[in-house]
Structures are given as C-alpha cells and as structure tokens.
Image (tube, rainbow, N blue to C red; front, side, top):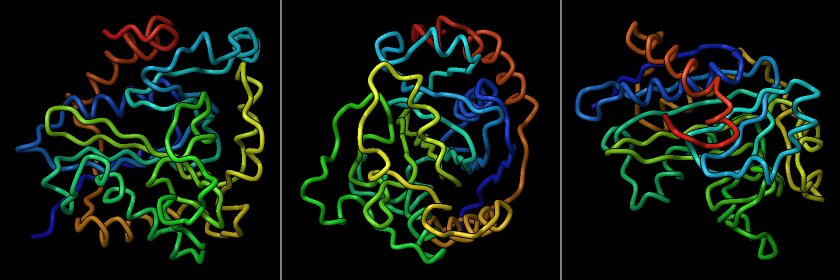
Length: 269
C-alpha cells in the first residue's frame, strides 16, 4: 500500500521562521493518524544554525556575528554549526511504520537518506555512503563545532567529499530528520563566525555545482520528489501548513526561535 505524504514547499525563508515551521510540523504530528511530511525549503538571508546541545559561546564568535547581523538559530537536532546559503533543505516527519523497515535507529538514517543517494546518482555523481566509501583514514563520528567537518556512517560522499549534512531526532515514536543539499560552495563564508576553524575543509566537503551538476532548482526539486517516492514508497501530495500549525509556528517564533535564551543559551520553552 502506497503511503500518501504531505509535500510542503515553503521556499526560501529566514532562519527563525524555518526552524519554527520544522518544530510546528513535529508538534502537530500524531504517529497513529497523521500523514507523513516532506518539507522543502531554503534560507534567505543566509543564517547559521547550531546543534541542540552545542555551546554557542564556546564555538561561535559572538562579536563578529553581531557586527555582521547574522542570524543564529538553534536546531532541535544535534550536531555542529551549519552555515545556510544557496542550498535546498529538506525535513521529514514520519512514524517508523510509514517508511521501509530499518533494523535500528542508526539504520533509519540510511533508509531516510536513500532518496538523496538516488538523487545524486541520478545526477551522474559518484555518490556513496561514508560507511561504504572505503576510506580508512576518515574518522566516522565525533563532535566538531562545524557540522560539515564531521562525518557519520550514512553521510553521503561524492568523489570522496561530503555533500551536505543530516540530523535526526526521535520523539514518541516519531522520526524527525532534516538535512541540507548545498547547491554551490558557501561553507567558507561561515568559517569567520567560528572560534575554532577546522582546516582542510576544501578537500573534505563539496557541492552540486562543484561536482558538475547543472540542474537548476526546479529540476532538482522535481528529481528529488521522484527519488523520494521511489525510495520511501510514497505518493507526494502538495500541501501547506494547517491553521493550527501556523498558530504554533508563530508562537515558536515569538517565544523560542526569536529569543536569545534559546538560540544562544539553549533554554527550552
């Protein structure tokens, strides 16, 4: 039986609104009754997101961020900082029974990201999971202040370099996962905002443009939707935020994602 998914394409939004929408969709998802969600979005203007448990004051140059008026938002997922610009971002909200079976929480990363692997391979890129790349010198796991500097088993490598990043959160039988698809290399623009700047990233990370992909954004979204349906076994139904989701989004903007206490201090509301 084919599962119907809500396809919510919100286009490019500011960082505060993006994170508020992601959480609003998660808060309103009921695993027994809700349709699963695939959300697509972008970031405008550019913003820096940090992981749920990241110590912002330790990792970020607050004075530089303030001087440049760069938005910093704290995600509800873990990991390090991500500079968001010229990328296509996705978010998946579903129950485990709404996707192909996974043998473990870790394996669910492989299941959910399978559409990305198919997308990149369909674009003619030599894409593999990090766990299958045969790079014994590449460290899998471990904390880094910058998300792109670290590699997990089911991150995707293209020609040996990491393309994008993904993070997942489990909550009451719900899978929430979001991740980035860099269209062009902009990661270096985020480095000045870090207190400690990882070296060698130019040889470790990449983007679609760097790898020679000529697909524009509308084509990329169309290809992504096709790969998603094929890999996750779903039928995508275009949709928007419900009235209740919009109310929750605005409350989260006002009380959480627009507040320094959350974004810099990590104090939940």
